[in-house]
Image (cartoon, rainbow, N blue to C red; front, side):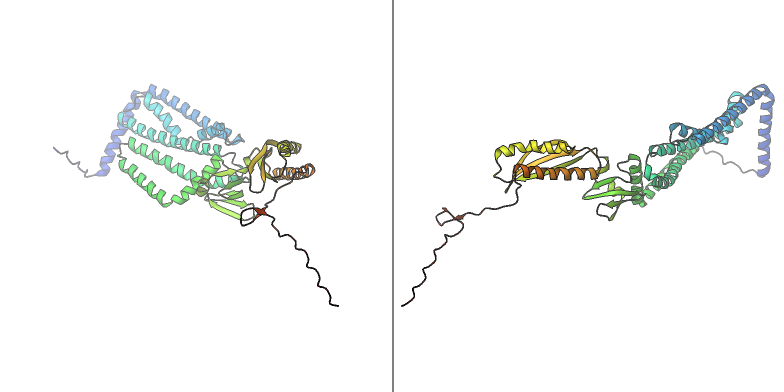
Length: 390
């Protein structure tokens, strides 16, 4: 059995007036029968409204006066200061609705409006908290402040869209609207936009990751692949670096984060490795003293001796390895210490009579029977001068 089709009234204006009159009579009767309850509820509603308004003004004053805008107290104050008038009014009216037994049509209307006010206000608060936490996380980004401000425009837009889209779905769902199609449409639209701007969003999120995670900052010297350069600017799409050889390097943020990055600025010390080659005819007693000599030179220059000793038999030399640390992150100090220690080794070895090796080859000449012969022929005697005829 099908439901009857509702009839359209012949006079819509008269039908509306009749319904409004009905609501007016219901409200009038409710007010006359609950005067005492309404008076108490109205007084309580005014107090609630005034209290919420005072909290809003107080929070706004605290937010303005605090110097550290990234502090948690400032974020909470700014969030409370964003309390809207619609929410304060509906919170006060809902108190009256719950205490004074309002008629069913009026109660339903108040409940719907209160639900809308709560959801929208919660969305505003949530957006403010999320943005505040993002700014707090990036508060010590230093040189990347300009990049953060540029990124925050898009971040604020994305966060606002996401939060209020969820709020709209919640409101429509509470009103009895089927939101399944809306959710599916938003999902498909989001996927389409993400695929269309995949490269842009990838570099943007990489820039945000650099700012928040701080693997490096502007002014740091980093190494990736075979490039060593100083970071000059972190943009929303690319990072600009100044190579040690002077040229400018530009690489997209997403590509940069895919690589293994060495932040040379954050080094607590600089390690130097020397390979020292001595001639093969160095006496074993002298070679045994080499580690002590190296330690003495390194410690005299203020560096930390790590290890030093024989390394390998090379084709033309006995190789010794020296490893020491310069307790400074400054590259210039490491260069100065390496220079002083290198010259100190050369001077001390000269005093000790220790010879450095260089690539040499010795050639032996053999006779047809395999016996070694001198690599040069015996000098021949000069032939006697011929006699003069008489």
